[in-house]
Length: 114
Length: 114
Image (tube, rainbow over all chains, first blue to last red; front, top):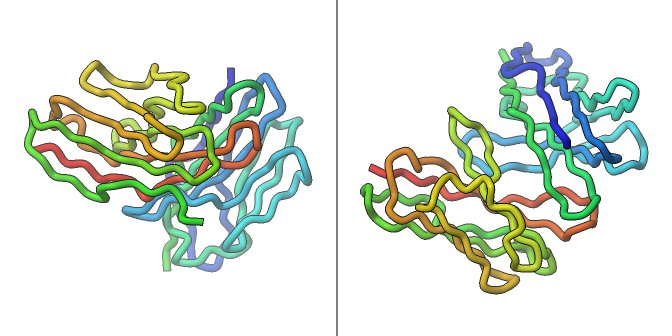
């Protein structure tokens, strides 16, 4: 069985300060991990992905995430928040054994304060 | 790459009416997923297909919901009869099974049942 936990439902940061969105997972197999972003009234857009290559993954818009197997974590970070980063972020885990079924986290809403 | 195409983008209808949502996956992708997103429940997987065959429909809420995939380039999600509690955003996503790549999402259909 696989699961993913996003520890914070809401995160609020000031513009220009670092962003940290936390994600922990469990998976019986070697997982693939993804972060998606959803802006209001929009679909889900892929930010970045980890698929067993480099553990530090760089994505779009200056975001990056580090896969830490010992901590079963895949936290999303950005050095400096921009107003346009305000959105909801989803951490997703999947494994490629058999049929690929993904599990979504419950989402973290990021608020950026001017 | 045209991406996953969903139609209609918005639908408003009265309860009791039949609603049909449509999805065209990315060409070459052989797995297709239907999701529902609401404020209360977040993102829920309703059903997914692999090679046009329904693999897991355990997320389909009740018999009023049905989904078909008559060919590799088209899927429908039907609600009959519709109820106000079905109001949500419905997303379709597709992937090439076993590729370790992320799911690609459509822009969703915003459904309002009056």
